[in-house]
Length: 157
Image (cartoon, rainbow, N blue to C red):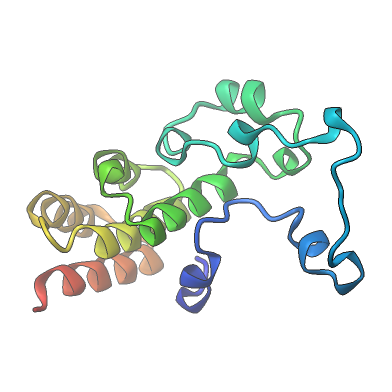
């Protein structure tokens, strides 16, 4: 599970290969737009986040397999998409985030619980129901912790 203190700092970044190039003092003020074929495709650099949560392995390979970061697989991108949605206030994705509570991977379940805790404060009923169900079946301690924290956030005034 990613430590909580880093989650807000990620903002909406789900993949960071170019960040080093952007913040390098030697690159300050440089124009990198020399070759049109090297320009990033917006739909790849800033993909729609909610669809990433339910993308199949086959779809992931088709859509992102040619990118440098795809070697890590879809789990880190899905975890980061959950974090980015929470940081952006992506309440429209709450139904997809709730589905992630059933994911077989503990890091996705735990991050989804955290994300719901951040997003569902205004209308917590559906998320609270899903989080309470998760607590009734969950065995992974880190996921239980995240779900409990999310429930506390959603029920405290």
